[in-house]
Length: 265
Image (cartoon, rainbow, N blue to C red):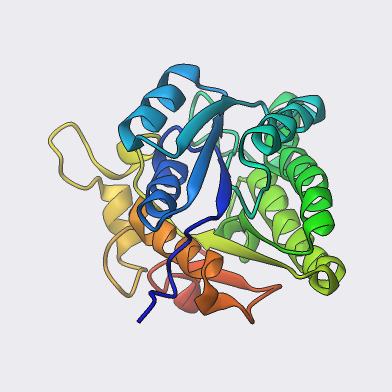
């Protein structure tokens, strides 16, 4: 019996895949037979990630906040693989101080612009340019990575909340517009997920969960933070034949946090 999760013959672009959630998604897609393009601004980590996965995986430098970069990426990928079947918009802006939580009256316009330029504008550029290619081939699958912050407002994270909510609504609009062309568009909204960029938020130097992390975990029914593979498994499902009739959906992968959301957290 054929495994419906297999992605043999498919070409996937995963943005922000040099590390973290994007790398886990690229790894899962490769394991299930896809040719994978790791698109990232970090040449060192991106090249290493592609080399680790081996044959059928390539790294391409791309700053998604620049439309010209995305256009060039698509040209190179189509020239190499002839087609693009799957797009995962995972790249996002991470401030140098990961948890710059400030109320709107103190929130820096520069931080706002840097977040929106990558998370929202960059996702739009990738979707606009790559969906045009998919329309020509009358097939495709797009997965936008948002956040639970796009579902429920988190305090003092105005740019993050706005960008992720925009991605969710963008997904719905695209599903309506692209469905007639055989293109499915869905969102994944991760909850708190442990990556190299967020690990310090969860664990102290002794490897024990911080007080803040323990407080957060007390609101998660499954009692643990997410791991990159949790998000990668959701992406694999949405990219596979198992999700052939799923489009316009926001798949929340958060251990149940939103179900019992505590607005005082």
